[in-house]
Length: 591
Image 1 (spheres, rainbow, N blue to C red):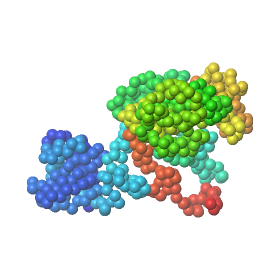
Image 2 (image 1 turned 135 degrees about the vertical axis):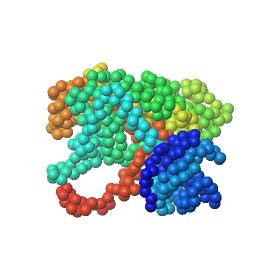
Image 3 (image 1 turned 30 degrees about the horizontal axis):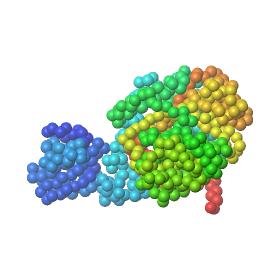
């Protein structure tokens, strides 16, 4: 094997000048074409590909060495940039090639388990086992580089706005934050555990108490929860907190960041201020607190229109305090046959609905699933209310609002994808504001906090804390992009008495408050400025800007659905000595 010797890289592969000059490039061999008297090698590094050429004018020893090279060898080549006879418009350097004068084989490679350049055709399990090979693929490489650019723009923007980057601890006290904690046993403190942070929430608030009025951190966070395409057990959060602010200040700061980010990373001008919807309006219009607004198909309340219809499903829903609501799928009648609507009905039942009524208008007369219950003119009234026309399909759900809205919200997305009416070139950002502070837990018969217990209620809602918790709205805000929640934040409580009251409203005893949050309550006794902040998911943001389908596509070494990492085979068994040091005994019960 050769060494680099005195050779040093002068240019990355895709960044060589497109005019004659001498360069030194290095990287992995992606492809070899040996034509006998000519050899062409596609050399790949993180920037892209350049073609190396060997021919009659190449020194014989260099030419012969080139003939021994195989895919994924690591090589270094010195040569002259010359025009390329056969132009390749697919790559940045497609008009030139490097006529090699000096060649070094730095590392040989055995045959790889799959072809790196065509890894899209390989099953995920194999690619994740050999993740270091899959990362050589240009698509994944560019995703990781884009994620890096997002991180750089983030730091640049917040540094320029006087934020201070401060690291918070990775081993903390376990506090209730919604998901399960990952626990770390202590060797020194027998029987006690640290937790890995689900977020730096408490610490960043304490930094405000400490006087650091603008904090930023690209924080690593950990949550032991079931995984899906946009969730990983460990993730990075763009975490910020500001003092002496209210909601408008934080939203304005975040909007400036998004405007800068989209311009620098995607070359897109985002119009600010961003649109806003209250939580109530978002649910009523879209059936979701993270609506995808790239298409219409909004939810319509037709309760008043059908209140006198002699259909028990509608009547009972309205009498029970619920509603009858519908979405209209325009020009969908040919796609949504009766069989397809039956599939939608089964899906609706699977997520909580009792059934799905419909109107399918193909011929001159609409086909209505509840026609036999209608009097003259009632169907026309429904169609007029909805603006439905020939060729449309109307989907109707009747029940309590907590069932109707999310079911229609889910159907809205399914239908839009099936009709292919979502413009994937759009980036629709919007704020969801004025969240409910509490949600009623049917199992425990008690009000739970929808957010963390340090969230400030709206001023006009303070009077309802004791008398009507369902009316209390919070100074909360979520930023949504194309139907995915990017960030969540709030103004925090900075008043000791109000904080104690909030804890008690959540059913916490004084002993419980002291055990879980005693140090936090103590800190606030010494003066806390008004403050608030948010946490923005860097991984999700990168996934959306890359157009990727999964968080795996923007993480270097991701976990799979059961939270294992296939490449290093973790988690793994540890030896008895380590367990003894940690005072741990394994007791696995049989399933």
